[in-house]
Length: 637
Picture 1: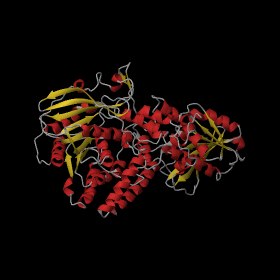
Picture 2 (picture 1 turned 90 degrees about the horizontal axis):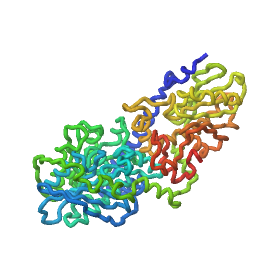
Picture 3 (picture 1 turned 30 degrees about the vertical axis):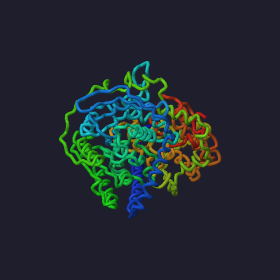
Picture 4 (picture 1 turned 60 degrees about the vertical axis):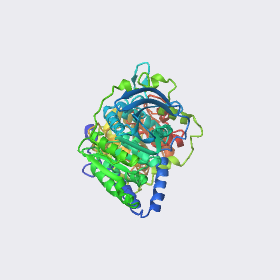
């Protein structure tokens, strides 16, 4: 007689198939095919006309993938709230509205003794909670202003003075700034079919609107730079805003293939649904700029793989050669870890000085004076929300969309298309790999192919008194799957007493299908292995929930082939967060006669409507765009 502890091993299938390695392999294989198709498409570009056609289509598709750009060119209502004067330059403290009540805080670095309009650089911050005040970023801005360039350093969403979740009464941010802030609002946005990237891009474009209004700025000489998350924003601007005349993306350019094999997920504004599926890659940032000047700044010891940087740079040179402007694309690599280094700043300043002002100079690294954060504040209290009670953030944008009846686009086939997603349907080839008795239960362990490259796994339970009968089936899905049987045994016993067979299903990534870790975080941590793999699926136009719903549907096919089961009375039992999968499986396939649930259901619309929600494993619940197309997607409905 087998013990329960032996049934719940994650490695129970290892003698038959490496089920724990299959999800990563599946993702890598699919992604590599997309990368290959993208490379082939770019390799076929042989003329400037073809290049123009390609990048025009790429720009249009990229903007579509992120949910479009906000249609808003409302007045900026810019104002200067103070000025700091230093040796050789001054810093103006600026606030403008990118959209109504969306207050953007900026520091404008101005060289002294300007005689005529000159070149300006938009500086976009990486993931420091301090935003534009971060000492490394201050150094970059001072290096450039001391070289004679105007610099506008802007706080991104959720950083510096723009914390999205600042509580005025508690005088602190409820959600940590930068990455956590972006992910929190970004998950809400994805449910509506938006990448939060659309708002980052729009804010940056409005910052350029502000720059070109300044009499000191020559609007034909605008550059952009930033490191890490700022490098991401720089690359997005290289795609979306053709007013950019030169760019220095720093510590971000690589390629998707190289990062696929790194263990980290990416920040919310770095996640563009379907980007990989379309065959797009970092090479496209350079294509969208060619032949405009671009300096790719990199560091040798980055977690963004340097080999991907070098490969993308080499491939990009071909498009600059079409214009006989290969000197306009440069690569600089500093021997450092992930930061905008002083030497990179100097190289960036010289590059902009040359290509925006036409002056060739290489000056030594300038002195740096760190300025206290409070002195750089544009607001009185250091936070937009403290100064402007009417301030709007991404949460408010999402609520507005949810309240707009025109935003919802009913499409009865949308969910089925997302779940099936052109999957490689294959023969099930069911294996019964164990048959044992546990107390009053007859227990069997099964494997079958859910789709090409991915096994499903299940344990079935029936009362030994009904060993030879044909029974109706209840499929059970819950967190942990077959490795969490102990907390569900009472329900299993009760269901079997009704003369039903219980099939406990491991959906993709759970139970015996849980992947091996790819990073040092806990498996289901917000930055852990399942988050990394869920992100990769979104890049490929897929999602973890869609795959798990498909697993349930293929289980219906398996029941038709399994012995002593009939398909006329299939029930589905779902628990906790997995109730969502059950609800959506029932919407997708009418062979499920009844859905039974317990407590713990999650409402997708409430995730958007609640400013503060439980974001644990949120990517387990997100099919991008579902709330725009499936109005009754909530498990609580």
